[in-house]
Length: 289
Image (cartoon, helix red, strand yellow):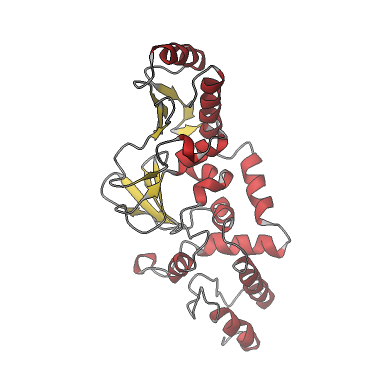
């Protein structure tokens, strides 16, 4: 304000945003920047958070990891990414923490996103370019950007395994409430299977407890692990098991594991697409899921 007193009105309008409530630590306030840049970013921030929030998480993830990793001490890491429907998770994200030491991890990705919007680039354009880029690594960010079902947790809180291919997507803040597995949710949607085909898409308890989709009709189970998709076919009857064994051999499923080809622990191919194709192949072969 000392360097650019003419920005007073724009500054106060930004401060009054209900998601910020006077706390601008998530904004770049470097006085050496062009005043016009601050004004443009402030206006785009208002536009960005006047829309439904569903795609904001995906577009921000394209720009980088904008949440804070917290070690839960169980081998899982917690991160808050902002809610698709609720204001409070965003306010908390923008607030900053003492551990940030003045450097809010959301600032750089958010400023880059706002700059894209100034140039007329839409959130959908940003995500589409990221997904279609052949150099994009198929890590946890790729999957959250590509599959909207993986960004539906109402609290915006996630727990990820170290390699990030096992996860919990929370609607509330703690694991003693019901939560979903984002990879399993995306798999079900990609395979065009409705939730009434499985026993449940909601889980509770420790993140380290294995989470399976259990199909009602056949009893077949599937879960997502670091190495790939794990199938449990023990509930299949004799004729179904014969079909399963044949399909499994064709797909390269060994001892129940549909292993994903990886480089340095990162998927080479889209595991959601491959898992959905496996389920569709099983159903086409005669196993009614």
